[in-house]
Length: 186
Image (cartoon, rainbow, N blue to C red; front, side, top):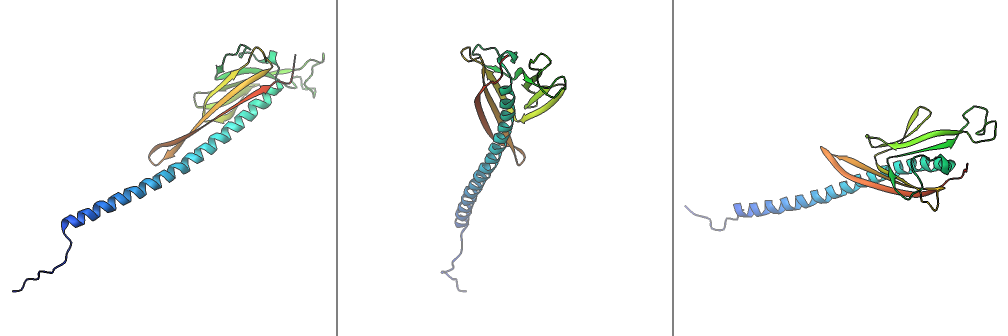
């Protein structure tokens, strides 16, 4: 019987080394793909947070510009930051005569409340109607300075979480701030 000494085969150790190399390469590729997926979801969340923030800030700016310093009720001009709610009034045709002035040529005011809710929403309440201005709200802050009582500083912070596979994934937040000068005087 002849034995072949030049038999070339793969040993178990060689196979395990190749298997470890393939596993490491596979994990590296999975990590790169997962990072790309995370960036995709984060940018999508950032876009949603930005859109929500702009929509809400636009509504708040538009109404607060129409208000008057004497028509803001729970944000005194003391330089302190107040959060979660602001109550003010806007010119509205209350008596239904076609303009916002009453018979004595005074402005007719409609009370408005803008506040955050436990459901992470920014809502506007006026005349018994509740409107959602923004979802994914974390905080809103209001401040008036004594030197400029006809201006309101507003900071709005939104945070959007993404769903990723079986659980929560990435988040993106947006913080917008502005200074609103009121146009009307009493």
